[in-house]
Image (cartoon, rainbow, N blue to C red):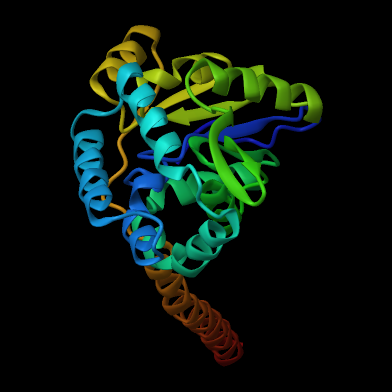
Length: 274
């Protein structure tokens, strides 16, 4: 997919991916509103409100004010939730909810970066209880996500670390210092203008399905723009690979067989001529 995905050699680098609308086609947190409703964590009104918020988010992206309202909304909604219940619901519904939303192009990029020897880090403003299982499913090496204060096994409503905007840049700089990543040799991908600090922190920033403001900024700064298509999903992708693998093997066998027949025919022709 990329022309300059050569192995990084002795330089240790990473690829930092925003999650929502970069790897998956929706807001990861809002996508779980129905399972949370089924699990008794939220009421029907909250489900409808989440659906509306999802629509607005997809329609116009998320600016700073929207993200701040989202933070306040999620903080209030999660107050008093049992942490283990949330983790159990996410684990039970992860593949059903998230797998169909994953962009094929994002998975290919993750694979290419791993092949080039780079760590893959998902950086998301969604909660760690949602982002970490998604990261594990995608094979990410590390996750940076929003973390809430927990007391007696329940969320207090206080956000300890909000992985949003400039805080994302601060977090990846701290991780780079701890892991020895060379940010000048690293990559970053996001759809939102609010992630400009994260994109600007690396040597290879990419705007993915960018909102209008980020697209303008990317053009002004000569950042590559990637437009991902409708998501295919890991399940369909894996099934395609399983079907394709025997077909590729059959073609290879046929090629070897054809080559052997060709060589044999040449030997017979030489024998006849002599």
